[in-house]
Image 1 (cartoon, helix red, strand yellow):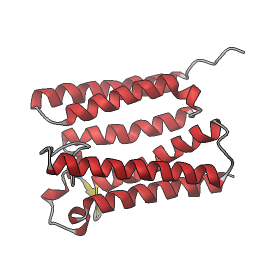
Image 2: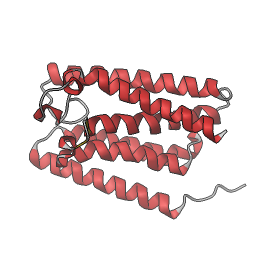
Image 3: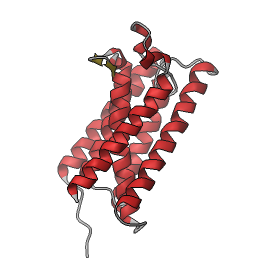
Length: 195
């Protein structure tokens, strides 16, 4: 049986996202900003995921969902990290969205590999993303403290340092991991409702 081609809307979303990442790379190169790392890593990850999506068992809408936090992070180049909704800053919303879509993508990947059934697959996906999120927070700490990075995914409290220092800034890594946790928990709720 012949594989169906990728839907046109998915190709459009991929090429639009990839174009945005190229623009971010060029702008960050001109500004000598550390987002060159972000846009390069995210662009390579996006290409890999787009072409391996079917083999990984990830549905098209989840792939588009994965694009959202990648683009949200790179939008920081244009000042997005200085935004906030209520008392919650952009960075925390990014972690909430990341926790949701990446846990969902891991869940679909594990389920397609017949890893298990039901809540066990979700629990493994949830723990995998929570662990990856913790590793990313360690990378933020090392990038900020030892490498002097002040922007991008290797920086702590990106943008929120301009606001009055609150616990969301003072305990940036802790809150980031909490919002990753809440996003992953939201995935579990959605999966439970869908069943």
